[in-house]
Structures are given as structure tokens and as C-alpha cells.
Length: 547
Image (cartoon, rainbow, N blue to C red):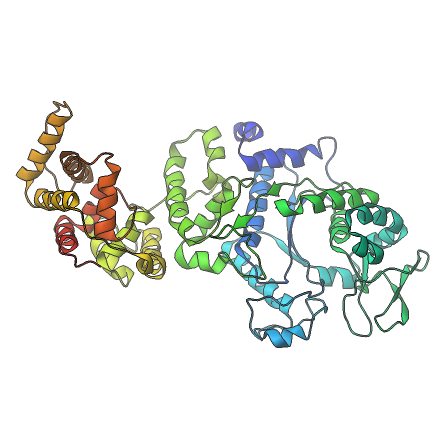
């Protein structure tokens, strides 16, 4: 264990770099609260999206890394800012007209447009927790409404009241003239309407713990800042939460860099040290637009899991958090295959490389063994060529290619076969565009079909290619069950027909036979799909019967 800890202390994997920054906070003494606190924040003004999951996943990776380099206990709080007022109705929910009647109410008081929970925030909180629970995250859920109304924040709210002017001095220079004229770090919850009001604080009484504000109808009202009668403005609220709970680490999106700066200043005004932070790049949709909860663009957690196992999503989240990534459906196959490549590499790696392998940060010390004997991208092409409607059809081909595999012995592969059929039918099939071959391509495809039918023709094609390249290696043994031999046939035919660069030959195969501009290593595809079946596929492509 000491050797592993030594490796972790020098590892350049980003979760360890983050964990070492957290550990440095306590190089002189352990935290008085008895644990290191990691926090993620979520605003339930819209449905949870994949970015929310990513923040929990990444923070968990840092937490796991910290636990390897330190014996200090840890906690992770997933905090829902559900006392905020509803400022606009999300565009991706039903019953929007009814919801519009609840504008400015705290999110826990806004009606649930889906009709399943007491309020909109409760619905979104439940969806988030259900997913995190299903995935096995260890966390404590926290509700702003419960923390405010139960008095958990009262002590820090009174300190904020006492230091009101200093907080205002931090915030006012960052605001426009109009906003500056009405800004207060305290937002009263109106006893008349229940609305969260953005109004100036007219008076404050530190001894009584109250503020005075004016209702929209002109009446002046005095309310305590404790007990859930007020909600703090966003940046001040973030700082107050850090200070009240003793948060040690919280990451956030690049769009919140300025908020982190201001909240950190306020946290110090409240007498506490702000947490360590990581500003990660945002996810964009297919058009390069920022993913938004209210717009509902980009992928949801549920959508990813419709087409791939959750570990592939974790893998995607691990990759370069400070680099912007587009997040839409066609990133899924690549993430799946790369994840399994890392799984296969892990057992033979030394300690340093294991700690740099994404699968360690996904699974900790319990890294599973991959049973994906066929890449996901290959399964997609198999689904395409076979027009598979269910994974049973897929297993008819898989069983011939990998006779030792079965749904019972290879459950991951079985699940992937089902995902591949679903992904193909929803995304690949509608976008498939077959084209007729050129004269050069037609001659080459016919020769490829002939070589797959007759080993003498195949070996002659390989010999011709070798001679043209000045290669005097002996001819391979003709083995039509060997994907390397099949690949050598495909390669030789392309060379013999003068394709330069050779990738134009493979591009032609994919476009004519699979209706796509890119595809798998074709020798492996032939081995999986079947030699005879591939010959039939080529003949259909030559006859124009695939489109």
C-alpha cells in the first residue's frame, strides 16, 4: 500500500494532482470537523443533464484519489440549490402555462409539471438521486430549502448580516449600474406571496438578526435572516455554504470562474478559507452550443445509457476536463471502445501506469475484466450489414466468430450487442447513404468477392501485391477464419487496383457496402460477418441493391 501511495503522490493523472492540492490544506493539522468535505452543486431549475452527472463523477474521482494518498475521512455532498426562485419556465417540460403561474416561487414550491412529486425541485432532485444511486455513487444529498429552514445556516447567515457592507463592497463593483442600485446579498421570501424577491435591503438590525425591505405593493416588512425567511444571492450564497459547511473542494464550469473569484472573497469575509477548485471546460452540443438544462440540448444521462453502459460515460468524463468537448450521440461508440482498450491494458501495467489509467479512477481497486471480444464499432457495422432487429440476430454471427462466448459467459458483450442494435436503428440507419461504385471500385470489389470465394485467386492477388512492392516474403497460409489473412486479401486487392492513397479503397468499401464514409478494419468485419455473407453483400452492392 505504501508503494501505491508513493506512486499516487507523484502521479500526473489529474485526479491525483487535484487531491494533492486538497491534502496540502491539512499538512499541519487534520480538519477540526473530522473529515475532508467534497461538494458538488446542482440547480434544479431544469431537468438534470449529463454535465451534472459529470461533475459528481469527476469529483468522486478526486475524492477516490485523495483517499489513496491520505487517511483523513471524506464526505461528498451533492447540494441542490432548490430554494432559488423560478425565473423562467424551461422549454423542455410539459404544462408550461401552469408553471408560468409559479414564477418567482422557490423551486420546491413550483408545481411539478410531470405530476409525480410535490414540486418541480423535488422531481428533479429525485431524478438526479435515482441516477446517482443506480450508478453506485457514495454521497449525501443536501437541499438548500431544508438547510435554510432547519437552521443549519443560521449562524453563518447572522455573520453575513453583521458583515453585510463588506459583502456588498465585493459584489457591487462587479454589477451594472441598474443592478447595482437594487442589489442586496439577501433575498427575502415574501410572507405575502411566497416569492423570492430581488429587492434592496433598506435597513438591517444586527442585534435582532433582521432586515427591512419593501414589498412590490409598497409595504415595508421586517423579517429575520434566519429560519428560511431569506435566501442569499447566488455568489454570496455559494460562499456562505462553503463557510458554513467547511467545504474543502468544489469544481465548477469555466463559465463560473468569475463567480469562484467573488465567492472566494466573500468566504474569507465570513471568516473561512474557500475550497480548492477546478474550472472545467463546458460540454457543447453537436452545433457547438453550450449544453443547457432549460434548453434540453445535448445528451441526457438517460439517453447515453440507452446506447451504452455507464462505465463508458465515466470514461468520457475522465478525459481532459480542462478541454472543451462536444457531447452528442456519435461520441458514444468511441468512448465504449476506448474504455475497453484501457480495461484490457490494465492488468499488465505497472503501478504508475495503473494509476494513470482512466479505469482506475472509474473503478478504484476493483477494475473488472473486459469481455468485449468484439469492438462496439464492429458490432455497429454488424448490425448494419445484417439489418439486425434484435441482439439474438447479432449472436448468430458472434457465436461463429467467438464460439466460446455466450450471453451468459459474456454479459458485457451481450449488453453491448443490444446497445448496438438500438444505436444502429436510431442513429446509423437513418443516416446511411449508399452509393454506386466507380468503374475502378467495381472491378476491385468484384476481384475481392472472387478472392473470398477462391483461395487460389486470393493467394495470387497477395503475390501480385508483394511483387509490385518488392516484397519476397513467403505467401501466408490460406485461412479464411483468420482476420489477418482476410485483411491481407483486402489490402492486396486495393493495391493491385491502384488505389492511392489506400484509404480511398477502404472508404469506397464503406460507402458502397455499409452506407458510411468510415468503418471497421474490414478483415475483422469479414471474419465476424462471415466470408460467404460478405460475398453476398459485395454482390448486392455491385448490383445496386443495398440502397
